[in-house]
Length: 390
Image (spheres, rainbow, N blue to C red):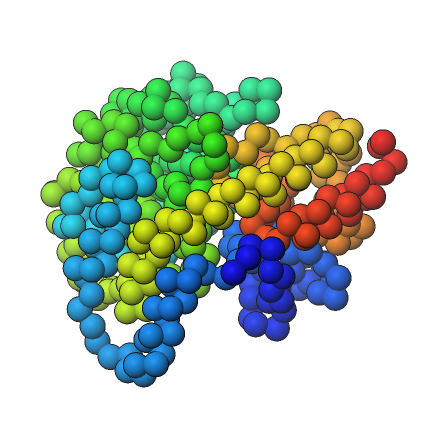
């Protein structure tokens, strides 16, 4: 299997490709889908083999697969992230957005303030508001194209209503890999304001050369009594549709509260999600991820060079994820104009920066998790759409 193999996802009920015309007006006939955060690569061989094995067996009854499933997760975290995870700390949700919702439901009350560092993954705000909680945006500082945190400003924003802070690590959409010092500062902020800390680390496997992701529990062990860790194989192995994610809770008291809520709602993992997670978190899966990262680094290089060649456009240095965050403020164009050029002239469906909250107004997010030929095509289209600037 080659990452260059073009796979046609049209007509497969694929959100990214089949919904770009209804959502963005980008024609299905010749549009490029670079919005929804999944990739256009087939899942790795061990995952496909496990699914085929289950199909060949032909019975999809009740299973008890917790032990191999949790053993694989623990092996992966230990070998890939130097993180020792207890089996009893692992809870399974139907993806990480559900994990966020479950944590809000278990540990906070309607009207509580929930802190996010914006711009940030748009689903956080949707779930927070839908749960009747109050969104508190703490804007990141764009320091010469790199996001940083300003805790003096954030301290001044706190009202006393806040009960939880959500960190996206690595950061989506900015692609930042937070340093140990930055993680310590987040933990100190949570302690100062007596906040639970929810660390969404779904992109932790997709980190580029020169950068190292450190799990929050590893970086700041003494934050464990207020820490909720979120992980999933979905972005890494392109199995988001299986809706299997993990909430990992180091503290026994918090675990008990979460387990009780899970039981009250009768939530349990599905067998395909468990078996494919175990298959992915394996030496074969690790080898595949190494190849994926090398390929994505090539996509990043091609895309960044093309963006840098267009006056007024700037791509934030991508340290992790396959999601490029492009600043159009240097063009002097209105948001409507540069968005129209990308969508209607270049015919590329992308995420609008405003959906990520304060600070995203002049940005668009491009998904580079696709074949190199499509990235190169997108680059040519963008160069043509903004040719009058060159």
